Image 1 (cartoon, chains in turn orange, green):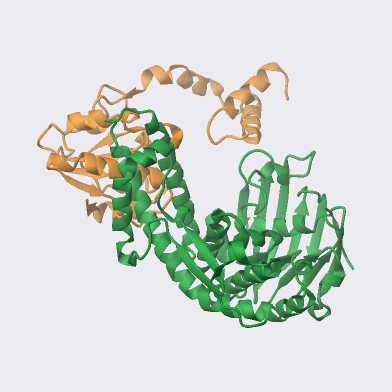
Image 2 (cartoon, helix red, strand yellow):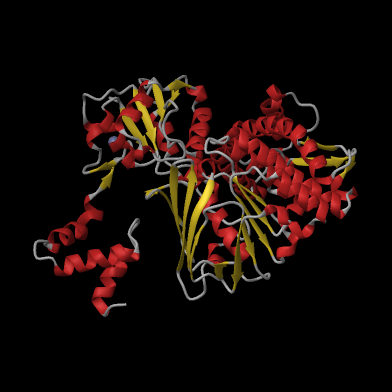
Length: 197
Length: 369
Ligand SMILES: [Zn+2]
């Protein structure tokens, strides 16, 4: 344990995901001691980040306006929606350049153990969007793990009567993993070979 | 495969221990409670990423320490593999293979081990869970990807049971479609497991019957049959269909009880000797011979399927449970296994014919005898 404010800084870093006690200590000392590093930049971003970041009212992706850059882009196809768990999955799929439609971010996956059911996800908003009859295909791109599978199965059944083509990313993605960790080539292939449910 | 060396720090009652094994068998002798089983537990932990004795890792770390380390080198011919495990008293463990982070489910394929232990008596006489664990170990040893399938199934059952419990207090017309999604995923995994269990038991049966006679002598017929929760005589191609039917018909009972009533987690293995159920009708000696025959059959099957040679065979305090004739037969049966590790409280219980290098274990310290 260190004195007062230094320990407070270490504790704050320790609360962040992926940062253990040793890393928290290392980062704190770096900030305090490094001559080349200016902590003012980080502190000014952190001070306003929550107010500045918005979530797209259409798709739930991170946005700097009411709508995200993808939903605002007139070149994106309006007939396809790709459903993902998190905003970071949008970034992963964008990297593949395979998909030119729009997204829908659920905000998680169905997991009874974690107390997450359909009502906790942005499913009502998805159904609302599907009233637009120009949408012809929904691609279920939830993570290739058990919770992602269950969410995809649930959605596929829910959407079965909408008269829309429902597809699921092809297998071949690393099982038990997160979409965001799949490399671009694998993810691109999974997109190309998506199967109709 | 053989274990070339093991290094422990702050593991159970070991402070620092280095053991190098250059021949087989390796015989560990010492009074009970001094660290023999703790040592072989470290080997199985490194090979599975979990303990076969306790579920909480905190019990594995020596008191006064926050983490224990196990380093183990295994060799198959000219190739070696280094396993490094950090066990934390709180938090999850870390496993590395040749320095690279590894998933627990990859270990079993690279580090096949078959352990015989006094608890094996539970396979014959205990609850169904012990027999399911035996079958699942056997599947994971013989089909590399199955460690993952079994872990997935386990998690799907837990998810589904949690959902069923939460539906218990829900109104009768509650939305069951999330349950249907989990049911569908459960059926896919259950079908794979049930089919492979049927296949592996068919394969186990002749080895088991032969190994029983090899250990017990005589000509008694040891037999195995799977008892499935979905009822008798369901064709392999119809497992999923039958499960779907049962879940449909019984879902209100499942909701009332808050648990998944059908699937491989509710199945059992029926073990019999001359057609009599061994769970209730075997003598102590017969039950031991049956348990050992099951493990020997596991060794046989693993030898056929392994890509890294023989499994390492561990006999933890097993000879003392057998009479002299059975001891000799067991030792003879395993004599051509590349590496056997034997523990015993009394060196007299280990047949002379076993030979090998002997070590003394006292107070968490192992020394060459
Ligand atoms: Zn958007």
